[in-house]
Image 1 (spheres, rainbow, N blue to C red):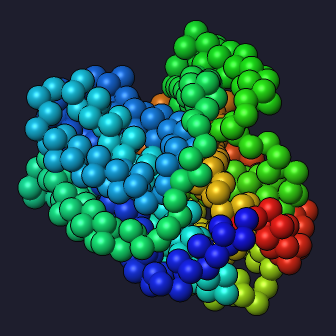
Image 2: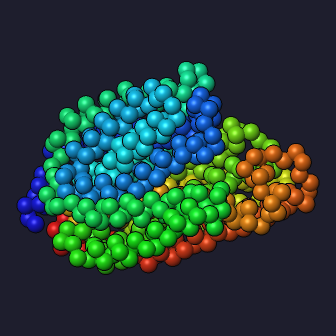
Image 3: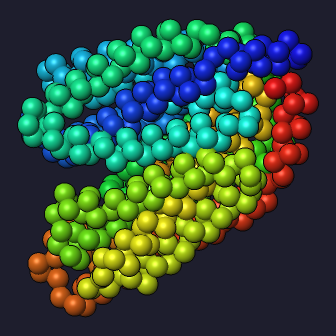
Length: 493
């Protein structure tokens, strides 16, 4: 234990943490810009391959499925083999596939390469925050994590713009090829910098059974959640996916309790701060993501905005995160995670209330923008201290798992939020109006129809508000920061 603490302390003296943050920021930019760019370039790709609607959906689903599932699996690998090696492997894989995907001869090859790219992205995301935590001294860790959130939000903001410009001017292939020089710089710089950060692996054996069961169980759940709103919740694929998850979850728990080095360390959840921080992570992701989706669809359905201007209209959410993130990083040394994260969720709740009351056949954009901005600001204030709370409440040897679980819960919150919010919106509508939610066509809708659609969106916002309030409750129930830090030191961090 003393040797482990000495190595980490020595590493933080010899490695410039801001250089490490620069390397990890390149990885975040690589993944997040690519994700946002594809969403805009998707119609161009679909037309190029003459893909059906089902295949178009799988272009998106293949990445989301593989990335979400493998994040938690690869987190175990990073704790065992070392975070630097696997992070750089992810950068190499993502960069190589970005080059190859532009030469895809057909849509099936494209989907397979997209899945491989998701595996590279999972390696990057699973190790990103853990490397930052390894590199930064405790007093300035909040600033490092705050900058990480800032870079991620900026990349998400730039992704759609880059995708639209590149796809229209140079072709969809360049949406992926533009990632190649960033990846090459990231790999070369990472090899030079990260070698001096001795967060070496524990050498513990891999829990292959746990990894396999987790992969199958989460795949079933994600497929069910993703397809439920389109295929119907009684479809055999949706029901089968849920059944696989329900059956395999208790199997996973039993297996993990009997394995010497389990992938899921359930003893970590004895720490109330760690458990509540993860619960609030899921609920915050659930609430924030659908604000962008619902508002964008609502503006297209009611105000008849096209997709481009609807995308511009929801930017206040991202701007709110951009403003709050550096503030949160600076405040983490003065206030506890419980105070900052709970306050952030409270601000998001106020924003959701404003959005609920601003809904109507003739919505006013300024109040809507204020509501969206508050949701983004609250989320930005929540993320940095909450992430710090998670990463500092576990032993250093389990930071890969902690970050992987946190990232997986964020992704799962996004998937579940999308599925449930769209289901709520359409559940209160007659069948003749359900297509209008997705197509954005309001030309044939009368005032009564607009009122029905507005009511559906209002109920969806109520669900997001409930999730936010539950997140506030979970966040406020965490233990004190000092207590969590003392427990971490006693565990041998």
